[in-house]
Length: 269
Picture 1 (tube, rainbow, N blue to C red):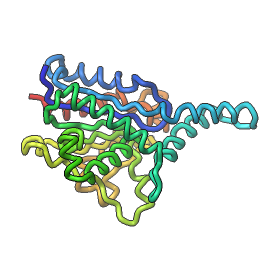
Picture 2 (picture 1 turned 120 degrees about the vertical axis):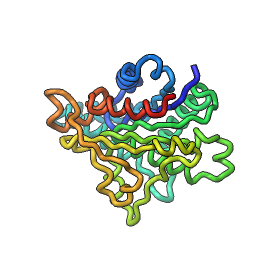
Picture 3 (picture 1 turned 135 degrees about the vertical axis):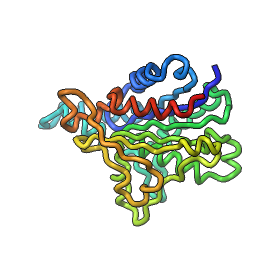
Picture 4 (picture 1 turned 45 degrees about the vertical axis):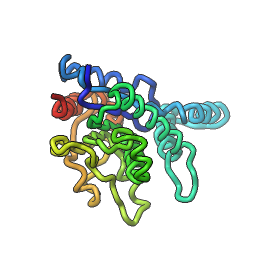
């Protein structure tokens, strides 16, 4: 069946598995209904395997030969903060982790554009959790600053010129802006969208006030024009919605999946 929309889903910091996006995809597809759901092409970006073996090896060594407490919390911190630290791109040097993660994004985007969308110039929505929002912001920035020749060779979808939506949740982009005197976000929406799709384009940012790793974006003056809404929600269940564990519990929470479904539905004929 012909697709109307492509959705790229990327996870953030912390331990993940290769099927991380399946619960969200299944729930949103069900909410859309079989007819509309069939017109959406999904492509997850899984990158945790790049860093996981090193993080696990460190924790095994720390537990074996050193006196450390709160092992479960420490494992989360090593995974979460380790992901963020390893990904950072340092001016004047080449960060292999940065490049390898972006290669994962490129592979999923190529699968989406060339295989699932069959080369069609469809609008693209990015759905990004946590550090994934920062990763995609950097990836899109890099594509927007490619040469005109490279953009033409990639085509409008793979060069992110049909970007019609950013849906971030548990987003920590603000934490990565403090090192810069001038903060400049990506250009949004994409320049190759139709006029009708540009009118529908939105950047929606969801955060739980109890999530210490998720933040509003419009508090950054530079982001006030490109982000449409910061939406405070209550993610998680009885054991997590009131504390930092909510950071991992957005994926199938109705406070996220229902507005996401409504937004995606606007692009389906």
